[in-house]
Amino acid sequence: MSLEIKNRQILIRDLENEIKSRDSSIETNFGPIRDLIIDPVSLVMRDLYAQVKNVFDIQFLKNAGTMSIEELDLMGESFGIKRKSARVATGTVFFRTSSKPNSDIRIPSGIPVSTSNRFGATNVEQFITTRATTLPATNTNSFFNATDGVFEVEAPVRALSPGSRGLVAANTIVTIQRPVQGISSVVNKSSTVGGKDFESNTEYARRIQLALTGVERGTINGLKRFVLTDNRVIDSAISQSGDNLMVRAETVAGAIDVYILGEEPTVVIQSETYNGLDIPFDNEPIIFPSPVIEVRGDVVGVLTEGVHYFIVRDSILEGSTSARNVLRWNRGVLNLPSSGEGVTIQYTYDKLILDLQSSIDSAGNDILGDVLIRRSNQINIVLSANIRVSPDTDMSNTEELIRSAIKSYINVLGLGENIIPSDLDLVIRQVPGVDFVFIPLEILDKEGGSGSDIVVIESNEYAQIDDVNMVLNLSV
Image 1: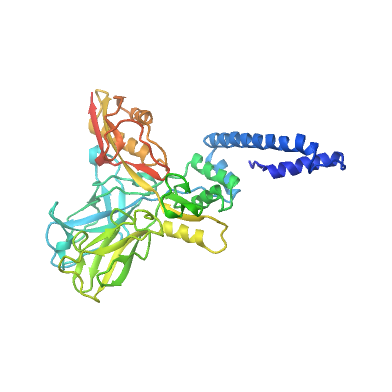
Image 2: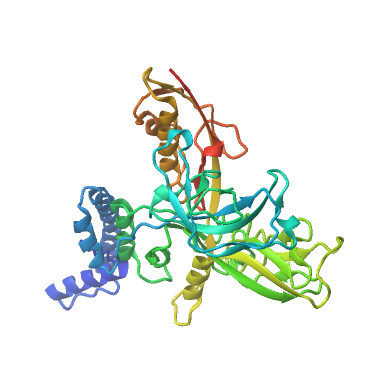
């Protein structure tokens, strides 16, 4: 399995040794033997090794897809690399009541919630709350959603089943499976994230390759291998000084940004004393778009984002431990804390990025460059398609199957993987009951766009789609 790739210095040494073994009196350091044999032959052999290495890599990845799971596992584990197991999806839900609570409503950890049979779906995905949450009776106006006419509080959840099946769209988790006194409904306002199936042979083979091509963290392949060893990391991409993704000022100092697909959302509470000044977050990177769960003054109670305070984003270093996002008080409004009053800020940050950066920065590492671990950027996709189905097809069930197939295709793409209309067409046409797809698609673009061509995803981005951004027009 292992392929030794010799550099030119080793090739020159081998040639010199072979010549000396035949006639030790021949001068190999300079002169005609060096100029006419050693130098040109070593150059040709170096290029040949590069070509052989390329063929080896291609063939290995190709063969990996046909190998059994057991065979590839044995091969990978011989290099100390284990296959990644499936990961559960996580997200948040809002517990709601239409009546103003007279006393605190406590939502315990472990409350089961689930999706419903939207679009005739037969599969119900179950989740449980992972942290106790309280809808307080005091200052309830801060928890009032005027648009929907309900009082609500947000709670984190995780899927009970591992894998991509736990990736569900916004507004699909709508069932409380164990009654909570005072709560009448539940809903997830954003799609769940992080669900990942058992690592495929092709994905596993790529990581094994990295073990063969680079083990030192000071190399690009070594960096990629290091981050991909962590079971929480799905994919990674590297940006170096001089490329268009490098936006921080350290581009002249050997800057290297390592973008990570994967996360570990972690909730923390930070205690501060109010003095009217900006408050930086102790734990970075915070997770946008809504990192702050609650800000509470010891006396004034719960404060509202957009009214009492704003979150000012660090546009250059956001997504890294070096980010300096701050909570900024709106000092022009009433009901702010008094000077010296205690304030607690409950928010979510990405522990995965912090852990990886801490390991990179640890004493004794062999990295010469300025390496910064960063969260990758989610790109929301919009799709509108006209699809013809067979006359005897159950429209609602077929639409749900199409939606599921589209999400299974797009939502598991890695960093920098473009969305190709012809590939999407094939995915849809493989759904039972689909006759054909009208091409070009009505819309296939990034959120806010109206194009229908290839959607280009940068190497530090990944694509995601949910039901809200899908319009499927089925006809017979």
